[in-house]
Image (cartoon, rainbow, N blue to C red):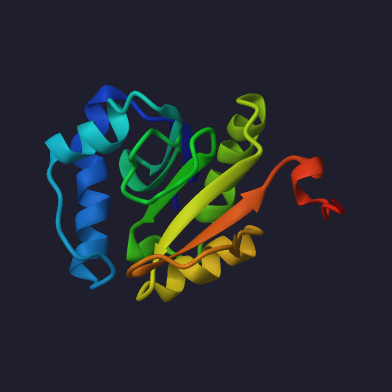
Amino acid sequence: MTEITLRPARPDDAADLAAVQNAIFDAGLRKTGVDEDRMRALYLDHPNTIRLTVADRGGRVLGFQWLGTAWPGNEYGVTLGWGMIGTHIRPDAGRSGIGRRLFAETLAAAQRAGLAHIDASIGDDNAPAFAYYQAMGFRPYRKSEGRTPHRLDLSPLSAAPHNH
């Protein structure tokens, strides 16, 4: 079997990113399907992108992970200056270590960018995402309509208890 490689996303990856998300939709783990234009707007051309990494096996994109910074009025209510993450892996490629490998790349990018926190806003009905993000060290920190935002604290000072 061909080895899985990680690489930065390319502008011509829009169709492959859409195929990954649509496979997730077909498995009942997303509420809507997507098209190439949506992938360009959400990930490839998003002005707040820090890193978009693709997992590829022999030319087939198995998954991807996006890291960006929160923007004013974002739909998830994430605090400005925080990182935001999205992980998307084909259901038939799950449990193969892709998520851990993607997150290692993303974590390094977050540290280089000087982020103190990363938010993962997880749909309340997405048990695989809860398990994944908790395994990566994210913890729930607030409640939101239809989702449970989790956060990862990157700076040692932000994780320390405050005695004020």
